[in-house]
Length: 415
Image (tube, rainbow, N blue to C red; front, side):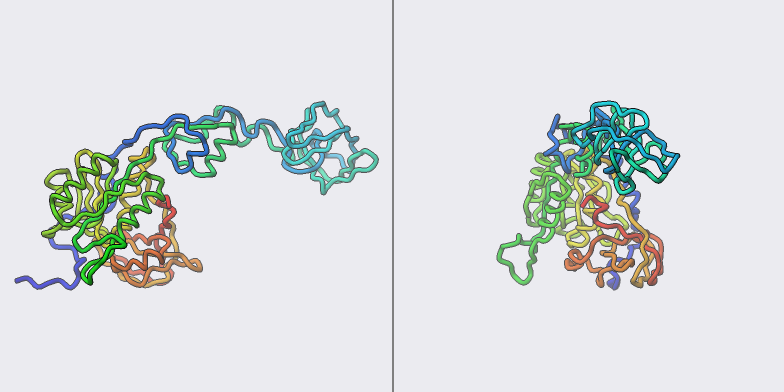
């Protein structure tokens, strides 16, 4: 009889563990956008949606040359000082342009954002000006074009301002509005099913015994789907029964574009998610070299992608971000992404073994990255504590305070 191992995360000899990068590339290569297109959706409804086609500017921004400051406009450059320029009667204000021509050697009052009158190209700041008896007195040189915004210096007419597959943010909506784009074509929202499994798992609000736990994964994953801007399909919770799991997956395949499951994906007697995916689907990976995250199922079932997440909440969260988020983005018509990380000095000590990538719950304080005190996959308090992940690659590493490590904020996953 073989002795039990003290380290349950040790790599079993002879097992072919799939590196994270290889697993991600396999997943990416099998996916493509699966949603339809909604035409001419008004800007008030597009924040968080994904563009289905490139957008071109119908006019320039700014449409006319205008003043960047309050002051006085004239034809530059101004090289001979001190000087006095006669003022033209009237002014140019935002929304009320001066319609006449400013004669050479004259100046006119102008306000911020106002169109530059004909015959002017330069503005002197009000603080640098003195007006006496209808004349503008200046005592400093100015180059031609000073304090003026050129027409089209930001966007030229017919410029491509946003490309297809862009997820629209409030600032990008502002860009669309600035050139008069009132509506755009966007992809329909991706429908993502969330399914929990396990005899020991009970929905929140249910009566529980000492050997049962509340379902933290389904609310967590449902909130993730909603925050990423997709349409949630709640597939509920099923017991560890082969027929029930198969029926839930079939229901999900009919209603969803992608299914997220949690639990039941190892090789135990009651791990019916992995068994069902092997028997009735096409499971491509389930032993991926990532911690936490053993095991992880990446599969197809009835033509619908399935990301089978571990049952422990921390592992489910990490794998949902690392594998689920880019997969959902691609299926939804967006771009597959690698989350942007930053090298930050560590404030912790760790002796990492070789063989698997590790994702540590982390946050940045005082210019250094901290990691949660326990790496246990069931420590849900670390999820609320963290603001991102430290990613360590498969190599052996000795990390000391001050060692640069890769910190990935949750915002890099679209949150």
